Image (cartoon, rainbow, N blue to C red; front, top):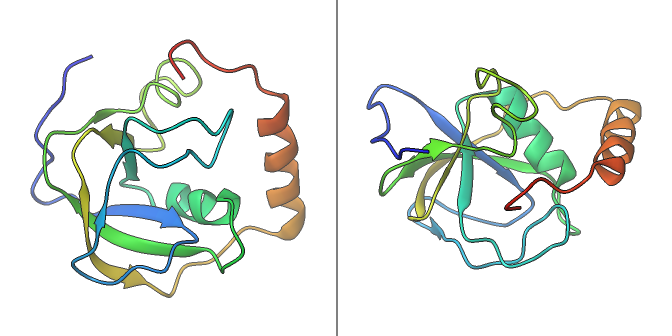
Length: 134
């Protein structure tokens, strides 16, 4: 899988429960919010506000789900956990990078999914087999 420089006109998002502010860096090396919660070798971003909403709603932690606009500080690549294996063609516009993401702002006008939809997604994720390399 080849890394590519991000398109300069693309807006990217990161959904989380972390309390971040513009200028903060989101870096690899923290425990993942999903799966086996192992140390993440990548940081994840998306070009889709809906996918970022799922990230914010499904992230572990006590705070509210939040969506931040971010810019990659290095090359990005398709997230193989969602592309080709689960959603061919990358309709979720999901990417990952080994380099930090810089927070540029917060998106405060996003619409979350219904509590029933969030629970259904949590149940679905709990039943998924880990992907190779995850």
